[in-house]
Length: 366
Image 1: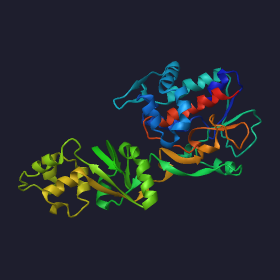
Image 2 (image 1 turned 45 degrees about the vertical axis):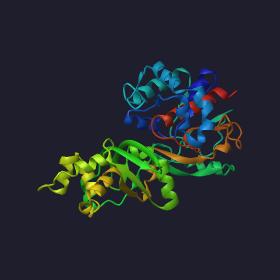
Image 3 (image 1 turned 120 degrees about the horizontal axis):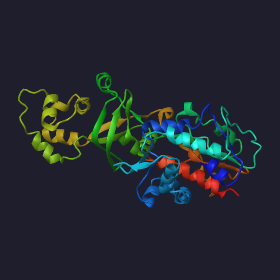
């Protein structure tokens, strides 16, 4: 996007890509439908960036979610707002948008060089814009190797950490072999007084999925601080606990415990299996069982590897760049995107901020 903005202003631009073909991580984002931005109010949108909101605000106010949607439209890709407020291209794919984008860059005279890894080389250019990514999905090009080069320049690099990631749990062999790859939904997740309704995907080693990602910053910070944490799950978010207690007064007759819960409360096999991870579950009183169903304590004891995280926290400390994302300790060099130490939840916030930063830099260069 910086290349496009600069080329439209008359600059001669060359893009250097680490991989043999362009935008591999962008294409990976398209596998989930390419949630490109979000439709909520701009103030609420910007607040999603937490501590980084102030430095990102000018760029996002300059190139807003609506501007990004208009840009997609001008490339021939219409967008729509989903039920959650998230914005997607109607094709649900990244590849048509990327093809149209690369065609536009070619028409603007932008050249590309592939299989190039920047390790501090002098690019023989007036301006260098670094957009080398963080440390998630390294096989797509963003491997974080650039950190050593910038550290040699005295630039502070905060350690990379997984963001929008999964977490590990100690499943029994029976549970993980039967239910790995199965979602739990609907479910309300609560951690550190923050709640969200979503879904969880059980994996061989723990949990991931949209609901987990939404709380991942809080969960990650707790595990980093304490070594473990507990996530509360409400398996019946639309039924109050008192009503569940009344339903559990139904005689069990000859039904097995699992059949009883399935028939009376409509609990799914995976939820029943999770409840049965506690071998004493059948000895609980109706009141305690109802409380367990409304607030199941799921212990989490580790953070999934950054290689599998959707994004990463950490990177260049924000005070190492000026208001235009120019590196203070490297002349005529800018850094944008996940190279910088900021993070955001899933929902279109990651792509929007990256696009907005690129346009901001492309506009600010004189």
